[in-house]
Image 1 (cartoon, helix red, strand yellow):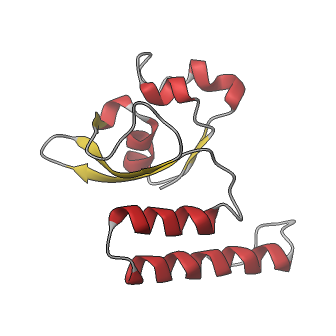
Image 2 (cartoon, one colour):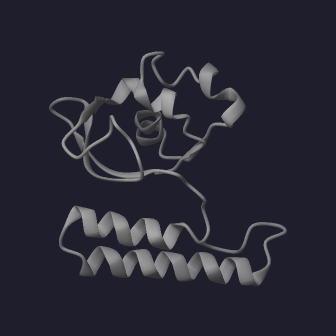
Image 3 (cartoon, one colour):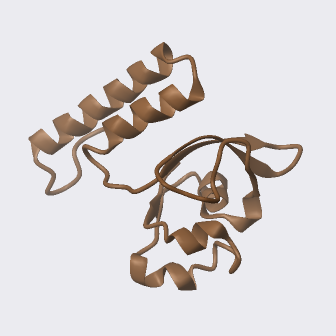
Length: 129
């Protein structure tokens, strides 16, 4: 992860490293997608607030992402759901390999999601690879 960002206290950097170590441990010790997502989201909550999280897998044959596990309340998102890469912010993140942050006030103007996208309706505030 390199040096802490300007203005980041060493305590903040230590917490980020601790979180990455916890996620790494979750990846190598958990056998189910649900349990893995739970462990990752539990660790991330300490440094990144969020309402929902999902573990997705890119399916190149379909140019889509398949939801493997979902945490948080949603009537639409569920394991097994597939969403086109071109119709989601996660597709942009996947293509560009960099985080995408969308302010709550700008979520309806987000051109990276189709107007009918349930992701847009949920109002995501941040995406990261």
